[in-house]
Amino acid sequence: MLSDCTAMPIQSVNFEGRPQRLLAFQDPVSRASGLIAIDSTALGPATGGCRLWPYDDDDAMLRDVQRLARGMSYKNAIAGLPLGGGKSVIRRPSGDFDRVALFRALGRALDELGGDYLVAEDVGTTTRDMQIARSVSPYVFGLTVNVGSAGGDPSPWTALGVFLSIEILLGRRGRSVAGSRIAVQGLGSVGADLCRRLHAAGASLVVADVNERAVAELLATVPAEIATPGSIHGIEADVFAPCALGAGLNGTTIPEIRACIVAGAANNQLATPADADLLHRRGILYGPDYVVNAGGIINVAAEYLGLTTGDVADQVARIGPRLSALLDRAEAERITPSIAADATARDILASASKGRSGLP
Image (cartoon, rainbow, N blue to C red; front, side, top):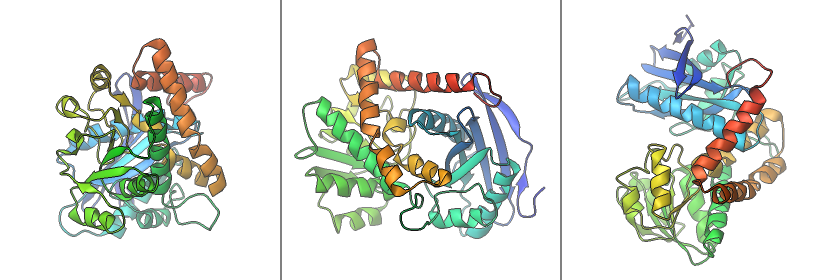
């Protein structure tokens, strides 16, 4: 029992053939409930953002945190980071709620895990929220930092990694960003930053977001056509960049995609593993999400390790070559890029797990 948060006993569960640890917590002041999932500590402390979202029920929250935590294990492994995989999700209370109490409760829950899980911001949370959690727990990153030091808002680094990946993928099709038509779904911090980078590089944009204000703010600085969030995947374009929530690539949307490349910042873009095959059969070149969008976690890792923004820039610049190597493996082995990425990540985790305790 915690002073402003009730944490349940840590549970060991199985998720898709591998163990995970789960910690559920509740905060009576903000009326929020949350879950923390630790998927792997083979490479280091489990690390991943905290998502605040109005989940319909506990099952939806559980499914999301487990998939996201597994994705973070693969993302951190592929990125070469000394971090494991984890994630936290909080069901957003309806109406007004005490945000300070909520993120203090998150901090108390983090302390229950004793450093096995490190958190940063994600969808629905901010650097200010992380500052609140940090006032309670030392296991919080993505904070405002001194000039030159790594840390702070990870969004620009995520956007840069996606931009560099789009360059690589267009190059595989004999094209460049300049003159390409790119459809961006989701204009949050990452999606909007990506649009600005693409515009500066000479791309024409089609954009969509459920938040009309986000669209208006982007159009004040960047010219773009507007589509609806539910139809933008079917826009004729060179690249479709999903930068909203996950599972947007599925049996319904993939047959409607009219772009030859898909690469974006959203996590868990594929609704099922079989959807990677569906993209491949349609001749659509897919940049695996956790390879493409690793820039943000690279920044968080650098903050944790006490590195500089220069170090972050160097590591984010490696996302493009890393993606190229995975595409080469996929071609050589006649498999999809997603299978190549998953296999590479599992190999890294298996190698790191040998001779040590903890989650694989």
